[in-house]
Image (cartoon, rainbow, N blue to C red; front, side, top):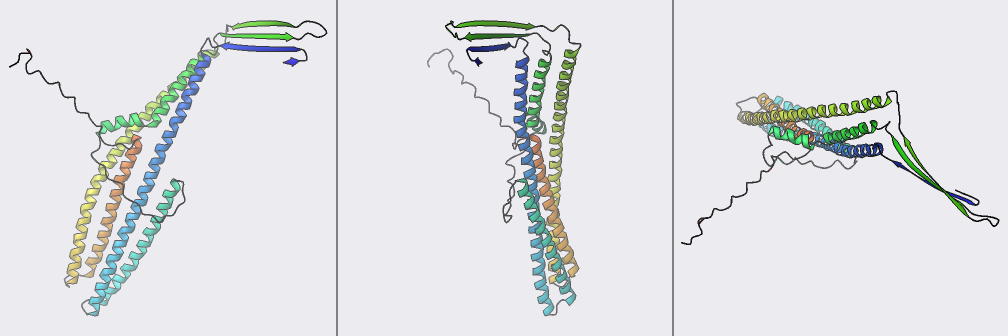
Length: 360
């Protein structure tokens, strides 16, 4: 402050003898850490959403391939039937039925293509992009080996899931706030100093003065406010600890549910693949009997529908298996599903063949 011929310089220092300021800083640091871990939580969720959308689009692409194969098979069957009709080997009703079946197959193919387009656009939307949808999806690579044991996967989830890290950081922050609440009405100590300079005028000499103050405040009565603040801070800590325990139980449930769905999907896939083999063999025999004039066209049409349904069931079962794996990765918080590598034990030191040191 410079008021004409006077300059005053002051300084003050608050001593954190109760630890209140340090506790507040610790709480802030832990809340910042929790927010950083929150980014990993969001990333894990986004990866899961993208995988789910990708697998749905992949299933829609497989449906298009199935409907294309069905349409081509019906068209080939129609050409052979027309040739047989021209030769007088089959009635015209067979040609008309196949033509109607071909129209229905083309309609089914169109519906499958539209579903694929919507699935691809949904995938691009989740990826926050608006690119061209004329691309082909590739099936994810199979697992290089077996899954880890169920208990090992559960333990891995409890270690890797970022939500638990965020909750743990919040608990530490609430503990720091609890420590701070204990010092709200603790003694405080402050030191202040002031230096004043007066510039002499009219022949007078310069002068200066120094003032130092020490302020120690000791609360005598707070009407129960400190206890109420401590109880409220402790309640927040307990709530956070309960939330962490509930989150842990929920993560364990997610992992076990994903494993159960995966095992069920794999069993369904085996059954669906066997049913597809059976349907294809039945269609081959129906075509063979019809070409030889020993079977009706109805058996062929039934065989075509059965093969299409069996192929769709395989696609659905394969999608369920892949989705279960994706959900397991989301539940674990990591893409690592294989057992942990066990290092081989170190070889024992070679025993001395001649412990007495005698040379032979």
